[in-house]
Image 1: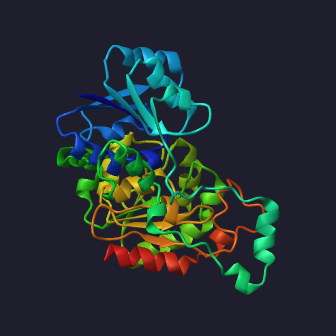
Image 2: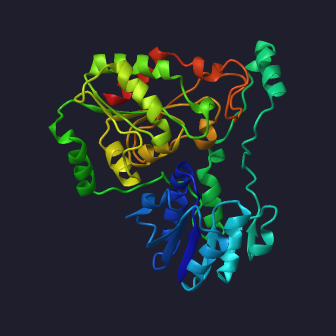
Length: 364
């Protein structure tokens, strides 16, 4: 049996699909499972036990080009994880006889079986500015009435529900990623970690979604300085090319030598990022893709949440050490906005002292 799984495009979302892929492999142990994914997260799936083959496509490749790649593979079944019309159309044009995905507007025609939304699914709805102002000005008894999300609200259950439609178990598993010891050792040597005896901590201060997901840089600097003073750690600064301005400022403010800080923002491949995260005793991070990667690799994570919801998209650890998730419990959070329209209380309300304590506790 040849199964095509159309993967998600974002790094964090891709990590959250790994429990579903593992359940799919469990249900169909002898199937040949191919993952179709955008180029950017493709290396995430190398050596993953749930995947036999990876087919990737470039940002410039349209739906017809992707379908042409797939058509000759003669797949028996396509499991479409994203909710986009395009992902369903790709499987349709590839002439895959069975095509399964969530029922959504503008795409149901292209699927042979649509799956209704889960009864316990929670939609990530952006708040209006008027709603935010109303929440922060309400009486304390109203402000403190935060929504309670059941455990099954988390995004991993969305993907598990889809594989459940194929008869796979919908019971949760922790996300899982794989890097080999040889890969890790090569990455360590490349940046000179084999010559360092101090504990290695990771710092990921960026977030692609927007500034509302970023704890203020000045706070990161203050926390990193004090953590380094107390632990004598080496900091590795992670991020993409767009984060290099932030990491350069942090590096400059710490005034550290190469032996105490390694600024790698925009300088690693995805596999190198995975390997170097694996080298860290703890990762301090905003809500972003590397947060999920680290947790799935079993790295202890301190995650700072503001405009988004840890109940819906928080990190899930692959080991027995649960992530430390810090929020300010702002009445307007989660708003799911890219930029804060008021005073950024969801992030400003998280103190440097709380972050320092959480990092040092997980690092011990």
